[in-house]
Image (cartoon, rainbow, N blue to C red; front, side):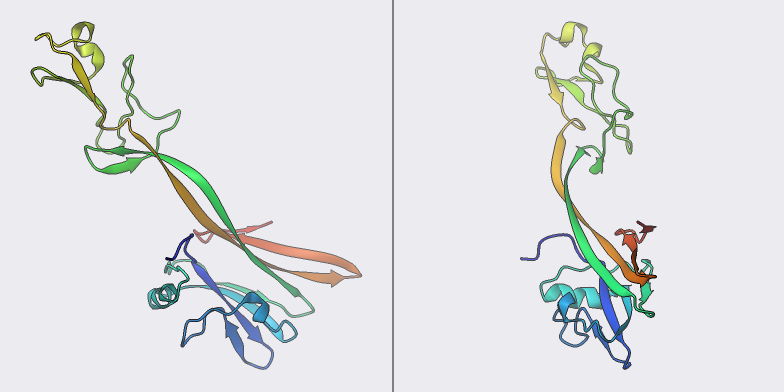
Length: 207
């Protein structure tokens, strides 16, 4: 089973003899290791987003990949003695969210999110404005908030049951990849390093 966050980029190494090595073989889609790159002939290194067909073929071989065509192409010139730096970091975090049972949409709840004004507040869905309601166990009458029923009981004498439309909180694991590419070079006997970070949305940051 394929697990982990999907790749959005694959690398291609370009050599000074006109040949190149792609992270995934264009015919078999088997993966080459980064250590397979011949750095003695390397003149350019690039990151390309997958096409939909490439992503499908690579995933079928056990490396989960997705196609995001709007991602920028990253190309790095490695002339003048520049030495390639490239690696990926995988991040894992726990993500909390709510699920609205009225409109079947997920939403995130924070300190500035809207809630009902009640001694038992409920998150208000930002999409359909639904929230938890109260239902009489005896006659089925619906109350918008707990205080709408006098002393918390229906006029028929029945007790209220909270119908949790939005207050259920769920946790799931979130994983994502950041790509780091750059080079190091020797200038007047001093090592200098240039490194860029590319996130899954294609934002590029010099670090």
